[in-house]
Amino acid sequence: MELASDEHEEGAGPSTGSSDELEGYKIVTYSFDKYEIKLKLTLSNEFKEIIEVKINKDFLSYKQKVTPSGYHDVDQFYREDVD
Amino acid sequence: MFYQKELEKVLRFGDVLRGYISSIPNVKGPISKAQNQNNDYTIDISHPQFSVVITPCCSIGEKMISLTPLIKLKSKFYSNPYFVEDMTRINLKMDPKQATPPEEWVKLSPGEQTRRLEESNTYALVEFFVYEKHDIFPKYTIDSKKLGKFETYYYMIDFRNIYRLNCDAILNPIQAPLEAKCLQLSVKTRSELRGKIASYYSRTPKEDYILQEV
Image 1 (tube, chains in turn red, blue):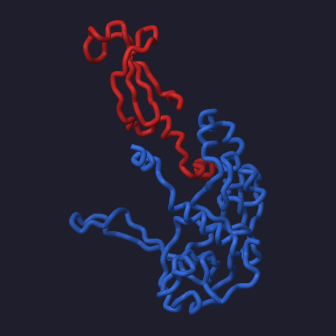
Image 2: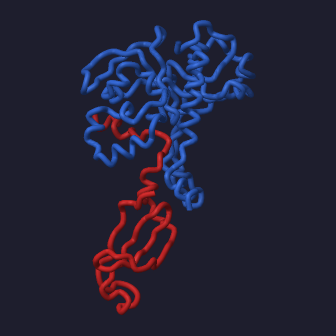
Image 3: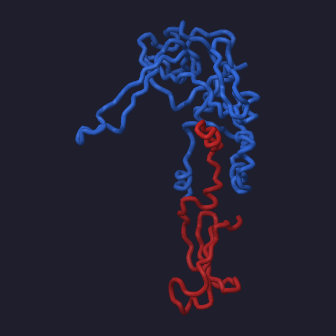
């Protein structure tokens, strides 16, 4: 399964944890299936370690957004007040 | 064939009836005795020309029945050429592009189009079921921005309008005032109505998908 597109960088340099450990590194969060994985990367994107794996409880993750609802949500196109 | 040619001497799910009233209770909010609030209520009584039986065939009886009035189509439905060709297509499963007016489809972002295409072949406008035109129905005027004014005989039901009616004469599907029965759906159409109303009640909200996943 491909990594979801809602990955984001938390920025280079120290933000959380030990500043010694994060000097010259960055933390990147990837959504993978129902998991959210925090990776430690060098500034040139080399993988160093997995910092955290947790269940992604984001209300509208990528996968949840594309989960078929079982019907076509088209009511907005047929409202009389927008005719 | 949308309607059965010969009416059976029995009340069936989807039958069109004449002569029954409709009632809608109105409140401002839940009545609270403690705070003496929202104690006012009204009940709107109307006499729709035609009502549709929504009680499943096997459950009709015990002096009660669930009905919903036949109402006019929304003019906006005519913004979709796929529906204009045959309004009863609203009753059936369709693909995402067929469900969307073309001018609205092209406005959607590629990502949103992809998301909608994931839905594949399923229902749209899930609250509605269109009744094919028939001679007994009075024609009325649709005022469509796209097509202008024209007359139609199509009617529909809205599942959100369903109400219960007590009627002493309805003892079971056979011992009932059958003189009120005007039209009966064909077996195929009745199955389509059953499928669509089941879908209306069986939709799972996205929040529940999430809970099932975690």
